[in-house]
Length: 211
Image (cartoon, rainbow, N blue to C red):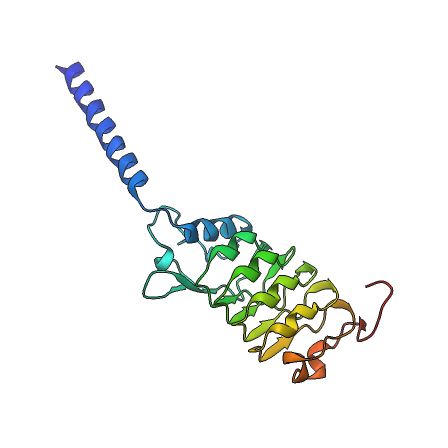
C-alpha cells in the first residue's frame, strides 16, 4: 500500500512538471525580455534594483524602473544613480519602441554599441557620468527622433562623427569631459550647441594627427 502511494505521488509530480513545461513553452516569445535579460546579465547590481526583472514573465512591464506603452512595449529604462557597474549590450538595439535610456551617474564601462542607432523612436540617450570608452558610433546619426544626447564625463575618444549633423531635432548635445579629438562638426544642430558642451576635451577643436 505504501509503495502504491509513493508511485501515485511520483506520477502526480510528473504530471505537474509536464503541465509547467507545456505552459512555459506556450508563452509567446518576447525579444524585449531577451534584450533586458542580456543587459541585466552584463551588470553588477549592488543595490539589487534589477531583482524584479524576471525572464519567466510574459512581458517586462511589471519590472521596476521600466515603463511600457499601451501595447506592452518598453518605452523607458530608468536606471540612473544606482551604482551599477558592467557594460552596455548591443541587444538594447532590439527595443524598437524605446524612447528614453537613462543610465547616467553609474559606473558603466565599455563601448556605446552601434546597434543603439537602430532605435527609431529614441528621444533621450543619457549616459553621462560613467566610464564608457571607445568612439561615438556614427550610427547614432540615424536616430532622427533624438532630442537629447548627453554622453559627457566619460572616457570617449576619437572624433565627433559628422553623421550627428543629421540629427535635425537634437536640442541638447553634451560631450564635455572626454578625450575627443579633431574638428567640431558644423551645420545642423551644431549651430546652436554652446561651446561649454565641448569643454575638457584637450584635443578637440582642430585637426589632430593622433585623432
